Image (cartoon, rainbow, N blue to C red; front, side, top):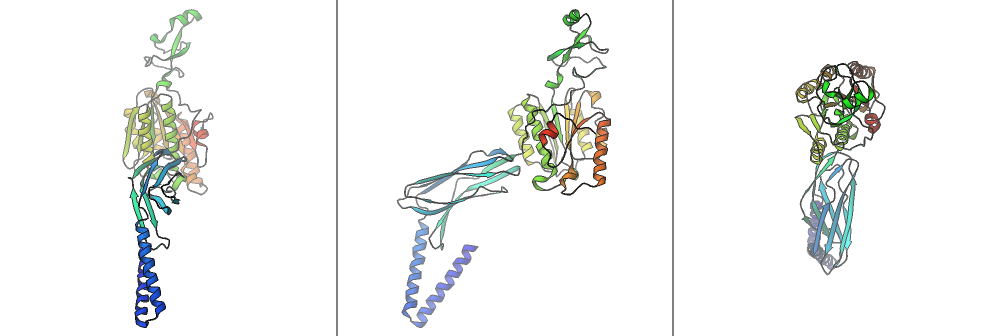
Amino acid sequence: MRIFNRHLRLLFLATALVVAAFSTGIDFLFFLVYLTAAILIGSWLYARRGLRGVRADYRVLNPRTHVGQVLQAMYRIENHDRLAKPWIECWNESTMPTSLPGRVIGIPARGTRQWLAKVTLTRRGSYRLGPLRVRTGDPFSLFSTDMTVGSATNVVVFPEVVPLPHWRLPPSPIDGSTPVRRRYEAATPLVSGVRPYVHGDAINRIHWLSSARHGELHVKEFDLEQAADLWIALDLDRSVHAGIGTDASVEAAVTVAASIALRTLSDNRSVAMTASARRIQVHQPDRGPRVEQKLLHLLANVQADGAHPLAEVINATLPQLRRGMTLCIITGSTDRAWVRGLAALRRRGVAALVILIDRSSHIGADPDDHARAELAAVRHALAEYGIEHRLVRRGDDIAVAVGGRVRSRA
């Protein structure tokens, strides 16, 4: 539109100059007419051949990256013409919040220019980086010529992943670290040690060599926790999240989910996930790099746009939980109805861990007494049912709040 307006004004001035010259017959006006015509024709010809012999391309070095990291793209412009190109503008159109910076360069005759463009990524999601646009023009900026090179590139920005060096899931109710009252059969060949016999232990758990050595019965401890699966339930109900942009509580929840999932996968454990967005998405337990990429792609695009209460999501997930698994719930809900649904997990041999996102801290104002009371009430309910939980507030170090050695309890 700006170029069209400039050309329209130029046409109006040239027409007025021609009319004035022929109306008055003044030689100086005719000189200006000829000079204007020469400039217009010369500028058009210059711009027309401005990209002759120019070759360009670009390549995104890391189209799959994480929030906080730097997206890098390598650009290369070649001039095969015998004349230099004083200025060439290069840029990409994109849907990213902050696009790769464009550049204006000059290229000598039969020369080459290449450079590395960088931009720090601040928002997760899937974006489109358009083809390379190359433009040049005449010295008077009257005419321009452009070309489009290459094809669009899809860029996926995964959520930030925080290292959790001290992360440890709560022990399963059926592993060797928890007293048993029923005669469970050993579900794994991984024996972590022996301990004195406790009433209710299965006979096939007795380690006879250790019993003979100690003069009393000893049983084998099976390290089920290290082989257990993790099921993450990410609550994306719009009513339990607050804040906007990178400070929204949903961003903290997604970061926590990604960090826990990748930390667990690095321990060679299977991870499953339920994300209750507008459409509930479920990934069954699996392990390996392929699962890591699936979960990261899921977390890169989910939003807090769901309408499913957490209690409903938990009830739908319970039938899929097997003995020895751990259910990790990440939510900002302070409705105590979903806490009661976790009471039966221990009887089924399923451990539970809750990551509470303090949504009131993401509003941008100090939480009121009602918000504090609701948060305290749900924490007290979790403690009453013996369910371990961690609390994450805005600005907290997630590595400490979630994976620290100190565990939060009401």
